[in-house]
Structures are given as C-alpha cells and as structure tokens.
Length: 547
RNA sequence: GCCCUCGUAGCUCAGCGGAUAGAGCACCUGGUUGCGGACUAGGGGGUCGCAGGUUCGAGUCCUGCCGAGGGCGCCA
Image (tube, rainbow, N blue to C red; front, side):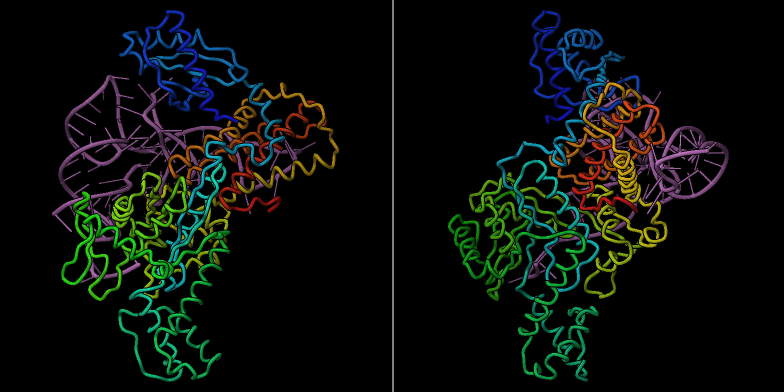
C-alpha cells in the first residue's frame, strides 16, 4: 500500500493544484512532496501541513487564504474525513474513521507483509556489520553493531531490497601474530612453562582455557609448532564462538569475507597498480603511500609498509572495490565510532579506482557503557556479549540496543535490566501481543463467525488511534530505511503497544451483548496482532503468545 | 592542536525546520463484583550546554565557545 503520508501529501498538492487551475491561487511551482507533521492536539487532526506558510511569500498571499483555498479544492477521497485551517496557516487533515477501520480487513488479507514497500523491489543491498577480528570474544559494542546491522537488514528487506549480510574480518597482520604468540604462551604455561605475556599480547581468559584444551587434545605435541600454527587454531576457535554468540541474538551472516582472500586473488596488487598509474600512489621511505591530499583528504597515508606488508587501508579499499564489483545498489558499513575515521579514506580510494561511491553509506554507532565502565578487549577484563545475553536474554539485548539513536552513547545498566526486568519496554510490547493472543483464543473458543463484519461501528477514539498507528508501520519502515535509523522501530513498537493497551482499557472486545461490535473489534485486534508481530519480527525479538 | 559524535525533566533518553518540547524510570493521586493489573487515567518536575546568526518560524540549520566520548600509527 502507498505510504499514508504520501497519500495525504498527494491530496494536499492536488488541492493546491486545483486551486491554481481555478485561478484562486497564483501560479507557482509546487513541490513534489510536502512534509507533514503529526499535531499534538487532537483538534488539529491526524496530519498537519505548513505548506501555506511556506508558499505565502512566493505567492504574495496570506497563509490563511492559501490554506482556505487548498482546503476548498481538496479532491474527494475515501480516506479524507475532515480538514480544518488553523492560525497562523496550517492545513489540518483528519482521516476518515470509517476508512481507517476498513483497513483492518486489508491488513488481515495481506498478512505480515502488509506494511512492506515496493520502492526497491529490484535492488540489491549489502550490509557489512560486526566485522570483528578473530582475536577474542565479541564485546557488547559488537553486539550493538550486530543488532543495528541485522535490524537494518530486516528493514531493507521489507523495503524490497535483496539483502546480503556480511561480516569482514582481518585474519592477517601483526595482531594475528600476537594472537598466535599469546596462545602458544598460554599453552606452554599450562605445561608448566614460565613464559609471560607482554603488554602487546591478548590477556583474555579465553586463551587460557583454549591452551588447556590443546593439552587435552595434543598433550605436549605442539611444543615445536610456531606461532602460525597457534594462530590458525585460535582463529578457528574464536571465529566459531563469535558466530555462536551471534546465533543467540538471531543474527546469521550470509557472507563471511576475510582479508586473506584479497591477498590471494591479487586484489591488493591491482589496487596498488592502478593507484600508481593514476599517480595517486608513490614510494617514500621504503613504503608505498596513498596520495590522499591530492584527492582533497587531510594526510597521505601508507598503504604498503616498508616491510612489504599492506596496512589495513589497502585491503579495506580492495574490499570495497569488491563490493562495487558485485553491483549492489546500496552498500552500508555499520561501524563503531572507533573505526569510522577510516571511512572517508576508503571512499577516496574506491573513487580513485573508478567506482561510484554514492551508493556506499556509513551507519556509525557510538559505544555501549556497562555501569559506566568502558570495555576493552586487550585488558581482558570486560563484559562479553555472551555474558550480557546470559544476564538479560536475547530479546532484551536486541530491544535495548535499538532504543537509542545509533550516534548516541548507550548506557546499558545491566543490574537494572536484570533486577527490574518487569519494567522493561520490551515486556511492555510483548505483553500487548500476549494479551491479544489471549483475547483471540477466547474468541476462537466462542466460535464467532467473521464472515460479515461491519466496521462502521468502530467509532471510539481509541479504536481509530489504534488503527492509525497500525497503518503507520509502512511510514516507519520507509523513514528508517531512508535515514538508516533502525531505532525508529522500537519507538514505533512502544507507540503501537501503548495504543493497544489504551484501547484495551477503553473498549471491551468480547461483549456478549453486542455481537456486531464484538466482531468488528475482533478483526481490529487480529490486524493489530499482525502489525505487532511483524514489528517484533523486524526487531528480531520474539512475539510470545503467553508470558 | 586538528577532525567526528553527543549535550533536552532528578536519572536514562525520544523528538521528520512548524503550533503550548515528550516517553520510561523515580515521586504523588485515582481506576478491574469486567477479555491477562507485566495494564491504565492524571499530577508535580524544563533558561532544550552558552552566545550570536539564517528564517514568517530553530531543540532541530550555520558560526564561535564550554563540557563528555571517540579518532588523529609503516595498529585494525
């Protein structure tokens, strides 16, 4: 179905256009789309437009006159209930209550996809997220990126995109060497050796237990192996555990892309060669530099060290070129605040390689604080994502991670989430769903026939508000996709649940004395259940039938 | 020092250039001889960090300053 806001916008623009044709308004190029606001006061209707205020200067008319003329020329429409003009020049639209409630039938017929969009039906999107290196367990910060990326992917799918969820990891370079060394030292320590980790090494307990595990499996048979062998063992073990953690959060990747493959297929050399051809790469101090300043960037950067090893920038550029080769219409990098600074350099590199970089978007997210303490992987003293899921459960983690705008810091009070879990917003939403299920179960037992339902009996303000909120799911998906802002979904979920709870206390659904009203309300509730379940599904949160 | 993000109620935070700035928690007062009280109705509580600017209109856009976090490596 077309977006609610778009339909209203079209109505108002038609009215303005018709007024112009009738000579009641001066000719002036109208915008293709007008922004609507949701007024705070009920007498201002469901939607307001400030178009008359914006046109006033260009048309040399008073805003009120313009609003009056548009109102007089609004075309007939089933969805249009009432319109008013208010000072200083707003045009207010009230949706038809009967039309609103008639939409319940449509939602029921269309099912969970009722709010899906068709804007991007033949488009391909790729979302890269988490992208943790295989050097330790996932942190709560990775969890935030994971939930943001996965939910955004769900939203893109709902908007019509064919989505690829992708996880990129660096499995070459210095840090992997340190990982291998760290594990070897832990292994030797378990055998009674007196070697110690340096500050550069990974201190986490997970390598201690992995070292001990190696002794069970190989006894002292690995003593002669070098760090590279231990690196392979650690990488495989840690990566597997990371994906088990993601599984617990309902996050499953489509593609695991590793840095090593870019070395093996010659991608890195191709980037360097091409940059050299374009005079955008040069040699200095034994290293190869990327001439970022020549492209308008701040500083030139090394892409191949004097040791012959690439820095992370080169594979990052090659990887994004690879994404471009795969012909995605939209590429989203979900990055933590600590990694986002490299993004402009990568774009410059990809652009220099001859690709259109407009398709590549950044979704940056700030860190997560647990009880005010920042977590660090190297320190070995952190709350892992697994521990967080252990404490509060996957549903709460997913919902909480999306309650804040990505660019805001997120304070996750683990004690509060655990102790006062009754008051968690996620339960509020889930409770609404469970309540609905309970009602529908009773209705099913009563054996109502839903053949011939009259919707014009749904006249209570709580009923129309509930229906309006339900229909706004499409608009919410649209906006979340346009702005890459998956957190709009949690706000929407709370609003819809709140509308339902209000409706529930105002309107008794199963009323033995009024069959017509009962049937209409059952249908309304069935539609709301579909919308609520769909919203939770997009969030990756379960929709329990009882709790 | 330079760059990025944030600064809104006691706390945690929403807020799509529009009207009298909202929610949850906390505090206070009401509501089921009723479909799930994990609910609901209401109340108190605000110099939207500060100062300028753009605009008919700024919490929202621009500039400067202050504060918090992050980044500024031949680490990723």
